[in-house]
Image 1 (cartoon, helix red, strand yellow):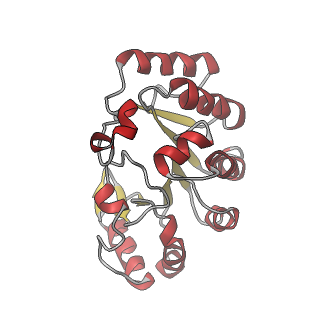
Image 2: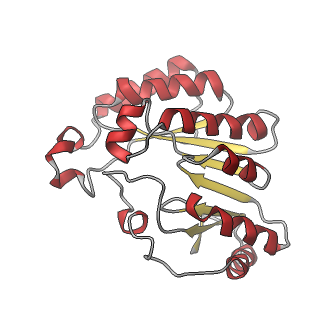
Length: 230
């Protein structure tokens, strides 16, 4: 854990996805790659980060979702006002989201795929669209819409996935989360399983400039607020 740009980032091992292109696979695929901690110790870490100048506590990974129980208990133990940021793929149950809505101040969610087929193939995430779109809408309706919280949705543009993923994701955001900022990201790199498995040869390259320009044009046409954060 460390303070990055006044943000106290705490990285958790493990993840709810199995992305074949994961850039943090050493963290996400090995749940033992880390230091075991208790909720009391996690609360102490949060307090220390706050005293060191962190403006918020950023729960990230891997993905923080598998550790939600410990995180929520640590927040209760912190006993001081520390803004909370949930940095996640948003692939969790409705019950989990209801708990998080009570304590999170800011949201930094990923919206990767525009359909279940791509999500299943590349992240082993069944029912992706139903689950992730629901959770984004819950966070937006309960916090961003009434102006009580901030939200930046991140969309990683994948090579060859403009029509099947980027376009439907941006269309959904424009219709359902129109006031939120959207980070349209071009930093995809073919890593982890992609270079060594012919099954993923279609994404074994960087995203082209033409693909990124097309993604930006789609966002502009839809009125997406992307320029300040992309």
